Amino acid sequence: MTRKAITIALLLVTTLGVAMPAKAAGRRTYTGAIDGANYRVEVPDRWNGTLVLFSHGYVPPEDGIPGGIWVANRAETAAWLLDHGYALAASDYRGRTGWAVEPALHDQVALLDWFTRTVGKPRRTVLNGMSMGGGIAVQLAERHPHRFDGVLTTCAAHDVHAGLNVQLDMAFVIRTLLSSPGVDLVKARDPEASRDALLAAVEQAVTTPQGRARLALAGSFGNVPTWYSAHLPQPEGLEDRIRAMAAVLHDAYIWGMGPTGRVDLERRAGGNPSWNTGVDYRFQLARSARKDLVRDAYRAAGIDLAADLDALAAAPRISPDPAALRYAYRTFVPRGTARVPILTMHNTGDGGALPDQERWLASQVPVKQLWVDRGQHCAFSAADEIVALRALIDRIDTGKWHTDRLNEQVAALGPAYHRVFDLTTFTDEEMPPAFTRFAPPALQRPSR
Image 1 (cartoon, rainbow, N blue to C red):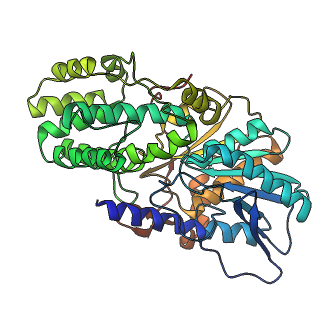
Image 2: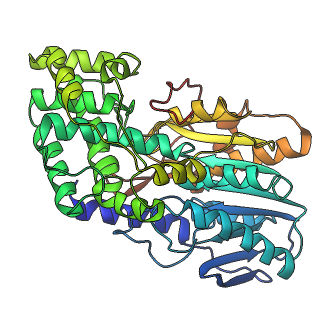
Image 3: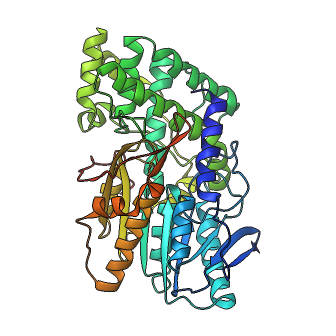
């Protein structure tokens, strides 16, 4: 995938959450800005008293977001919720793009305050967050326990700091084994040049068995899935599986979160919060869910895995800036104190926000997990999102989870709600219900 294509894909997937249905009679739309953060609020004619407050995800600053403000993952979801009496609201956060967690935690509460003054006090307020916004939603519930009644997270990154350390580990392997020691992974002197060098290294490596083996090693330190399509089955052959993993490394962890993505992070944090000092990569491989893939790839390539692990052990390491590390723990890591019902929904093959994140969150707070058996990041239909929101609201009302017939509920909503966007082909296709049972691996490099 070319860099221009990645940007186009990001813009296309964001517009799926922006488009709104034709305004129904009596529906009120509010737009404006609070403390520099734009917002959008939709209130149906017969409001049922429930407000769904949506938190959008991370978009690289260089890509930008098209006009409009997300109020759900998909336009069909927003239309259904409005038709069924739910009010919708979302802040765009100050700055809109990048690692805007800190402003989001302020701006979403400021919007809720505005809604209460202007529209009315909600009978209940439900948080709905996608990707980075899922982590924001959990933190909002922690910090304001009496303001929110439940949380739905979709494709969420909960321990963002762990994700940044995992990204550093994978980029470190690519630089050490496939690129040049002159490439900057943090505090880059020339972010674009460092990013492009890493991208070129991945693009070259995927063409040879030896390169693919080393990409598999890099991906193993993040448990990166070997599935990069929302519409196609998971690949089965060794080469195809590693090519899928390499595409995730290329697009998400170098293009999106690599040296250029870290410019915004380091500006906000006041330095580099990530580190790999003291990390034993032999140990990390031994606990990785992809260790067998790595061993198979090295065996097929005829190269020495032990020698590459020795090279990683000998390579100079990266230390964090103490103030930036404190910022990361304060801003990117939930406290584990949320007491409202939390429902998480994740793709089994998500490489953008790893499924491991859900296992970590479940070790911190009580959660109910839902899994949709697709590749890609945030590969959900409107029906998936609607059914999940209904399950959360039912849990708030009854005190019990009723999630045993989700695929039947998805099917009952009909084909108009079954379309799923695929970042690799830029297509939006009807997909069958795919809720399943799944046990994710343990998160590599958890913050606690």
